[in-house]
Image 1 (tube, helix red, strand yellow):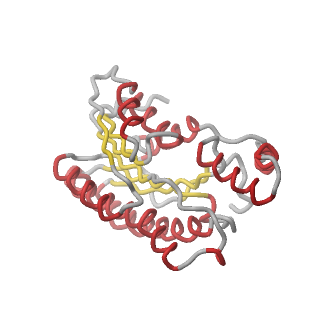
Image 2 (cartoon, helix red, strand yellow):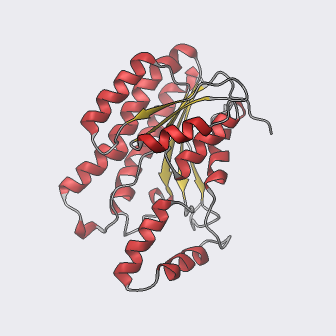
Length: 261
């Protein structure tokens, strides 16, 4: 299937590495003009220079820290005053790991600002152009923990669940404008985030990191972690006209890990 995103403008959060970077590269390869958004200016500029320009695209970067909501809101509002986005990928770094008894109310507030408020604000700002244009795609990078909570990721479980249910409501409100809103429930992917989580788990359990990774791989029916490029292929499809009748969904990409359906 050939996906053509020529003349579409995409904004990709958390795109300095991992899944976000792979998404930016895949959208650019399909012809989109891509704005990469993250806090590491050096990495973003390097990636911008490496993106595909075979179809005459213009790519750029937006430097912001999702964990500082006040600054983020100013930067993203200024960006949308000057730019129109057709494809919005809401993706941020994950909040700190930990269980329910370890976290304070302030921890939940910080996670809410990071995962929920950043996504809602970006979507609200992007919607004006999408509604005027009669076309748009909003894709939220969420987690399988929305469906089957992971005890050591209580902040992510809780707040991502809020984001996905909000997205379902939004999808109904904007459907008649040919705007789709979908959530991707992310399984175990071979990224720096997984490495960090595995390191913390290994330290807590006093076992080698390699054992944690092996157990993670064994828990997946496909017996491996996902590749960021595989994730990016799904995002690119959802961003295309071929996915025009798919909206309001939670789509797992997990190698069969989820036990529910």
